[in-house]
Length: 221
Image 1 (cartoon, rainbow, N blue to C red):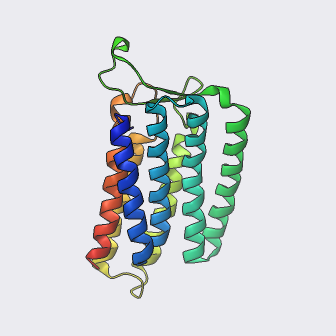
Image 2 (cartoon, rainbow, N blue to C red):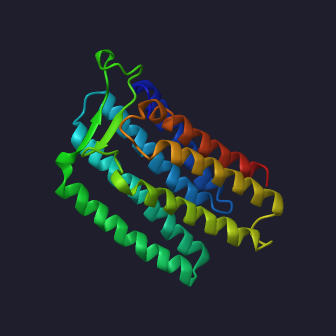
């Protein structure tokens, strides 16, 4: 995740700025993506709070809820845009997943930790280590988080490519690039393995990079 309070705070404001631009530009899926980017920004603000010495257990549990809320927002957005049976089933499934995540966060808040290593730990930077018990923040369900993004963005790409009225072929391929970029970033970042602090330090850059790619793809329409 963000390697310092300063980087996390800068990432937060950059992401909020881009989210506002995308919301008012309102091309294709801009508003859905702007909400997701705003949620990424909120995670950066949580990191800033942790680096600044705020209560780590509560903020770690909150970040856990935000991560699952991202998938819920994406699934609801996909249903709003596509309005078909597949998207409805996916939305209902991730509503249930989100409710389970909230229940887990409140019942097991003591299991969540956000640790900022110091030099004596042997870790080279101050990237936050996220823990849910003895596992990463998403526990054994990190694959479901990744799958949620794969399905959600994949459906948007599939239906966009089959409708010449929604996106041109060139923009469709830009969307594919966005999808592949974010999938790679997600696989690296949100597995949240406790020994992956060096990789976790990339999340703020991944989130900002994704936001810029979304913005640039709209400029090229």
